[in-house]
Image 1 (cartoon, rainbow, N blue to C red):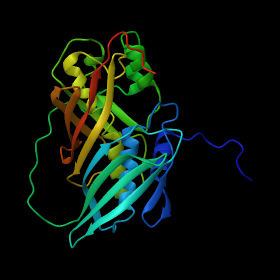
Image 2 (image 1 turned 60 degrees about the vertical axis):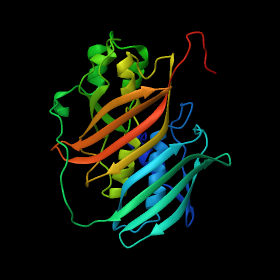
Image 3 (image 1 turned 180 degrees about the vertical axis):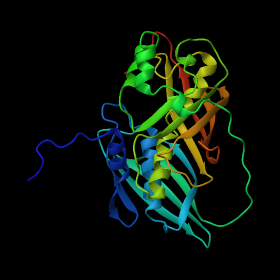
Image 4 (image 1 turned 135 degrees about the vertical axis):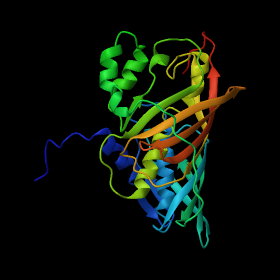
Length: 299
């Protein structure tokens, strides 16, 4: 008999369900809706689903090494997303795919991705900065308990709800002051539970997580926070390079900085390291970074 009282689905289970696409045709996939209660689909969800769609058309021996995506329209969280994969090239070492995400008959996102068959080669990397380990930092629940009176209400709500990605912020002082600081932050991230061993899932989960806080880094230089009513943020494009194998359910240090903001656009970069100091990915994003007039009331 069916269970009348099934166990509630965790935030990570919900994320994995959104990444488990339904195949409609050889190159056509359906992604489940997500982000219930949000005004638009979270960009990381579209990144992760688009990458899973592309990976489903590539031999398992080839792993994604780069993706470049453009956010074209805000996604409707009440509707599923259709992913149309174009098989651009299948070469001796590299495979190229183009993915178009569609809602209401219009493209909302476009992505190109490249996959590479593993082979030996030269090896060097940047050094990971020295920061406190994630075990030394408060988890979101403890963070809220310790700073409940100092955090803005928007940040209390953000850190209080369950998320599929566990995050430990190295320096929380930017949430407690409106001082303008250097646009740099370090955040430990990992999936909020054990993931399957399929490398494509780990890559998609990292793509999802890579969009969480990156553009927010640009606001540090202006004493602003992600949920300020007078700030409008939106991802415009997103590029991600995968350098080495990793597990997204183990701690990863996301080092983020913003070298430039101009003309209502912010530019941000990220380097992602394992806890042992191995550089596993690099990220670049540009986004809309618009300051609303105080009298403006959004629809």
